[in-house]
Image (tube, rainbow, N blue to C red; front, side):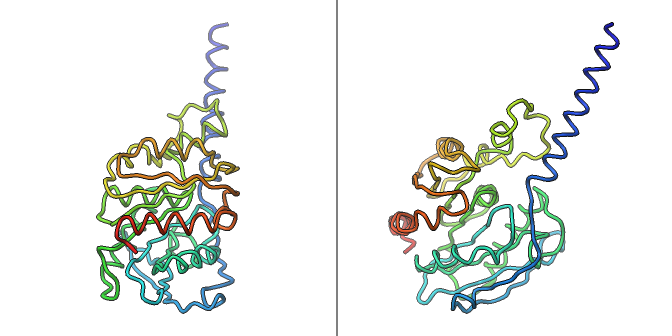
Length: 269
């Protein structure tokens, strides 16, 4: 009887691990390669930039200059689509008076490779290294902005490299925290993916602005607030409204006002 029970428990364990692995493989990265639009569609000139990673992959990004801009934002997008789906965010950054450099992670858009957790961190470092080669921007006035999954990338980069400020929008403390909200019965140690912003954000000493919608239907507001609470000073939290993928439209005026105040307070506008 005990042997049958043990076999049954082992079978359940194997099935659960298999489910977790399947969930990880199919829920984290959703890249697309088709790029139907570019900034010209909204009247913005841009540079179609290619740059190499440490592991020799060729990545693609867009550099969009804003007239008279003193500060540049390095923008890391979420887990789905590619840079061509972020035109509205590019408009927002232009309205803030910022240059924008938005990149596609490996496997997204025109970027080579396949996305992995460690890979997207390398992609962020390569993007920052590229910006350091440009003589038309001020390297000391560089903001890192991460949206959703991009917040994980932004926190990781800001914990390792020198930047002027960090803005985290609609993100989360760790992959385990997100998993618990979807599948609370899955032990976190089953996950290979860490995305441990909770640990890394404690190492970020620059000014930080955290943004989260109270009615975010994908990443619960409580997770955004938890990440903020774990961060050290100086930090600010901006509560907004709207969907996970539409809050920049739903709360447009609030975002413009509060991000402007944050940047001015830190001498970045």
